[in-house]
Length: 355
Image (cartoon, rainbow, N blue to C red; front, side):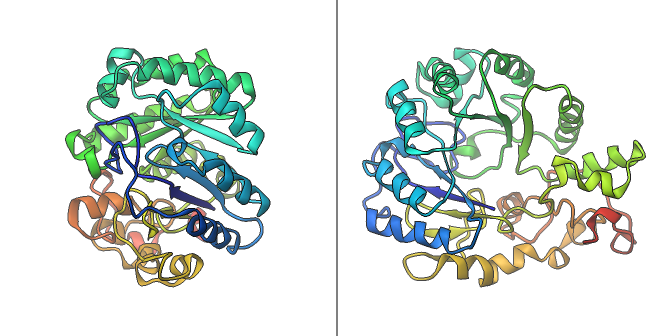
């Protein structure tokens, strides 16, 4: 469903939670143009319709061949989103060029409701103003916009003010990234499981009234909470299955999602730094479908701990990236979820989970 390609390791920002631990200069061994085009051929080889390709980084605008690669991807009928960094490279002219090149949407990160709070996370003065201006420009040029926001102890008390700020410009989707301690993210603190549960319950209450979509990233237990609420509201399994929360439900890391690093390594997600192979030595489609790593993270019945017996494991499955960050095992339990499954959980799965 989604292919994320870390186009470069280079970025002018120094974000405290950066998964990639990006630096100012590109890595000397990052994928060259001909290798990148071969990668795009592999994305198209997944079949029709092809996956949606997200060009991330680092900062994709730092690649000199970015528009050449976008043009090539569009020739393969691949839909594209781009996640530019809020640096001086993010100009109105750049957004016009992305729109004219056929980019479907962009994503900008907003981690605070004020310059003081946002720039403290991004560690570059002026980033907040550039982000807000970029969001306004995206609306003016007709580029659908997703706003990504970090959820951690450091941002928790400001999140509703960020939500209010998003009403100031056109937003397609608000994506809430639950912190995972990888890369520079080890500098920050995750919410406690109880605080995370409370936050996601509040988000559930906001979804219907928000003027834009709201989604969570690396918090699959959000679907368990949603399912419990819908059952309590006497919704049928058929009605629940048709809600946006449960379209493509289940494990996402390595199951509908694949991430390719700037060096060509293939990961189940950007937050799970264990490679199933490399596009320089193997085939992307084959790695995704057949590597031992990808097969294991998709096998919910092979998980250890409470995730392995939870009756919601096919709906939720837990974050494989967070399990690895905590325990060094992508098939361990997700420590962010406070739910305690019943001893006979595996015999009483919610009807929604039965395909």
